[in-house]
Amino acid sequence: MTSRRGAGGERTSVAAMVVLLTLVAASGARGQSLAQRVERVRDGKVRMSYATRPEVCGNGHNISIARATGDWESDCQHGPARVVLDWRGGKLVKVDTYVGGRWRELGDTVTDLGTVGASEAAAYLLDLASRVPGEVGDKLVFPATLADSAIVWPQLVKLGRDASIPRETRKSAVFWLGQAAGAEITRALGGLIDDTSEREIQQQAVFALSQHKSDDAVPMLIRVAREHRDPDIRKSAMFWLGQTGDPRAVAFFEEILTGH
Image (cartoon, rainbow, N blue to C red; front, side, top):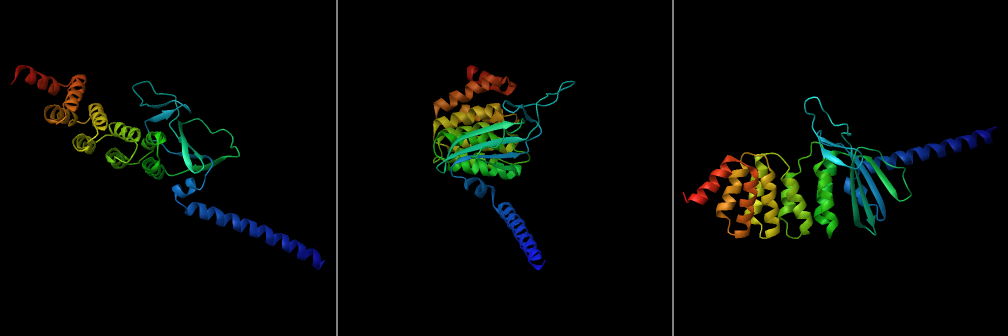
């Protein structure tokens, strides 16, 4: 009888230890940063999900910025964002981004981090974009811009200015900077046009400025068209001014044509 109770006690102790170790492991995972959790995986895919901005929707593959208008509303799903980072030998080789839909069953080489904080995800993805060599870095910028309540434009400006980062990543950062709202964005794009020495990045910034809805965007383009030291950048600003249809742009062209 004593022996049976002892065996049962041992089994109980072992089970309790397993539960305790599981709780400790889970607590340790929660204590790790997102970067630590992702970059523990050297080979295989890492999945994460996070909340998107209200206007972002998708059907699991196609992603759009949709707003309800009048009697119509898109039937695509408003989140979550689903990002897959594919690692080989500790190197990021592929990035896939989805909105809505559902994950397929986990495979042996897939690590699912579950739902993570949107702001933390955006900050991590942009930080990773600054560190990844080659072409894959530019694929990290877009999913960061989808994150709910994340203020990403300061990191986008930093990416756009950093000449050590691959050009496609910088161009992607400048493009998505042009989609953000606020007068600060207009000033930041103007700064990129003035301060960056690479013509391709300057031209991307001119285009991004032309897409910006701020009241200051057209005057900034006029300034670039009038004063920039590079004739190709002035020409680019003139072209995009012509696409705006803004009365201020028309007045500027009239000034040039008439000489006063």
